[in-house]
Each structure stands twice: as structure tokens, then as C-alpha cells.
Image (cartoon, rainbow, N blue to C red; front, side, top):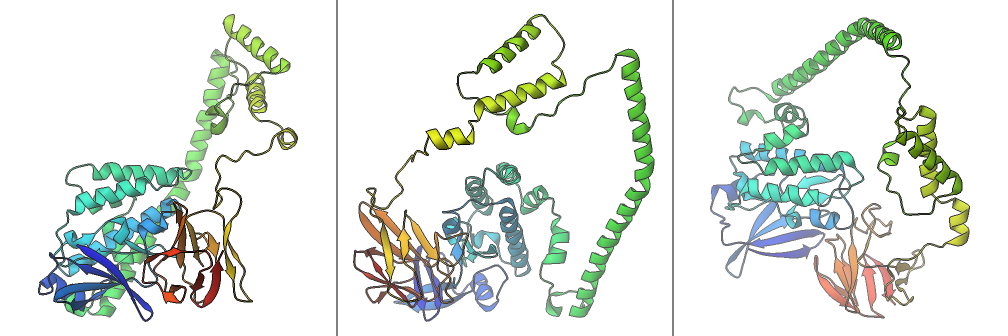
Length: 435
């Protein structure tokens, strides 16, 4: 399979040439003549006797490029899986097999602002969907934000589910807490009259959809009312049993000291080897003596005092850190490594210079995905990328709408070109000089 990219006027295309893809198949005619929600639309073209499938990717970015500079969050993982399920549901209506979908991160396209999913379906493709989906879940697991615990747990559960034999998309949706029938009924596309066997009109189907949604809302309201009615009785019962258990403990076992809830970050706090102060050493010695003579658990006051001492021992005061130690730079992130940073010097009056402080460096107007925000209407969300390898500089157009030019030559879509000092770079219509 050969894949290339092309820009024509204000549209960008991914060109696919495959021996397996055939234009005379049912799948090809169905995909070319119908715009299926969630699938990249394509048209057929014949060049040098070869059939080419041109997929429009204007204003979209591959998943691998978006996750190259950022981690994925739990809502984004859910969005990808739900969009994938809806695409499969739409393909089933057109009798299209799931094996024709390409699930490689380089060919899964997203809208950067909304994270909406667009898939590439190759007519005649016979990929193994369960294996490809498993590799996709493994890829997402490696890109999760480890500070987002819900995302880590969800991604790991999805990956483990794909390790099982004969799993389906319903098994993955179950891990999301989502019922596929209800999800497709409320968020999926409603078929028109030609696709219904009982001859219902669009108005009838729309009314049925609203009726089912109203039934779900009614059931939720009735359940909430029942819970509200049971709440006073349960509260009285819980209060009674709580008082009874407290009296029983005090009567036969004596008053029990209240446990202290220590924060989880203090429980798992890793102490660094430092010299203890005199007060801390004396208190720790006292605690060891209490343990040696076999006394009961430490009281609330001692536990709280110990937690505060541990925190104070391992955290240096702010004034001491600021006065005695400066932040040490672990690695030189500058361009040349010796202090001289490269830049794109603006040749326009209403734009600023762009300092290239590290590489790769992405320029565009999407705040969370680029290294420098160029808030111009003609600039794409991810417009271009500048990289440095072996003391050589390279520039790449990132599927931009209005293009990137170097020394007057317009780069092709996703083309990588060498960048020399003194070259003039045109981002859309804004001119810069690389210095």
C-alpha cells in the first residue's frame, strides 16, 4: 500500500494506492456514493493506469501527531471509543465489513478542537479488526496522562479486554458504563424511510426517539422519588444503630480513641535520607520506647504530631530554598546548546518574532496543541513544524489549509524540506526570515 499527500486549491487529500482496493466492488461503490458519518469521504482517480483513492483530510490531523506533544485524558478516550462504535453501527447499515477500517494512529484523523473521530475505510481491505483494535488500545495506554487516575484505569481495562478471545465492541462499551442500544438510539443517526422495513416516516421515528428518551427520564425521576422517600427512614435507622454501637463499645470495651485520617500523599510519601533535627529525633525515640514496652496504638495527638514532623522534615522552607539553592537545569533545551537561539524574524509590521527555544517546534493557532500560537484567521490550527537533527534544520507543513512556503516555493501537504539560515518562510501570507 502506497500513501502520499496532495494539496489542491484549498483542500488537502491523502492519496492511497493499493492492490487490494478495487473500484468495481460493492464496498467501493457504496463508500464513494454515500457520505457515512465518521468515515473520510473519498473519490476515485486514475493516474498512469493506476486507481487512486483520494481521501479528503482538510482541517483534520492524525491521532499520532496530536498525541505526539500531549497526553490523552479520560474524556478523550471515551470520545474515541464511542465514535468508533457509532462508525461501526453506520457501516452495518450499509453492509460494510469492519475489516476495511484502518486503525493505525497515523491514519486515524481527528478534529483538534472537538476530538471528533474520522476513520479511513479502504474498499476491499481485509484487516483483522480485533487485533487492530487491541493495538490501538495498547497505543492509547502508552499515551495516557498518568496524573489522571480515571484515564489510567479505563485505558488499562480496555487494553485487558482486548486481550480476551472473541471480544466485541459491546464489551468495550460495557467498560464505559454505556449501553450500545441506548447510546445509538439517542446519539446515532436515525434512518430515513427507505431504510425502514415497516415503512415508518421520519416524523414517526423522531417521535419514537423522543418518547423513549422521555421514558428514560421518567424512570430516573421515579427512582429519585423512591430514594427520597426511603432516605428519612434509613437515616433514622442508621442513627439508631450508630448510637447503639457507640454505647455498646463504651459499656464493655471502654472509649475508643478516634482514628486519624492521614492524607494519601503523606501515606505514600517517600522520605529522603536527611539528618533529623534534635526535636524530631527525641520524639521518634519516645515513640520507639512506647512501642518497645508494648503500649497500645499511638493516640490521635501523637499520630497527628508525627505526621506534621514527617512533613516538616522532608520539606524545606521556602526562604531557605530560595536563598541557598537555585534550580539546576537537567538538560540543555536550547536550540544550539550554547546559548544562541534560532528565531523566525517577522517581516510584517503586525506580527512578532517567533523564538525557537526547543525542537520539535509546532506553530499554529490551537492553544493546547502548539508551541507558539499565531492567532491569525488564515493560519491553521496545526500549521507547520520545525525540527533540528544533526545540526540541520527542517520544516514540515502539517496539512495546513493555506500552505507553507520556503523561499517562494509552496510545500506540498506534509512535505519536509531543509531550512537554511536566511531563508524566507511564509506562513499562510505572513512572512518571516529564519535566523
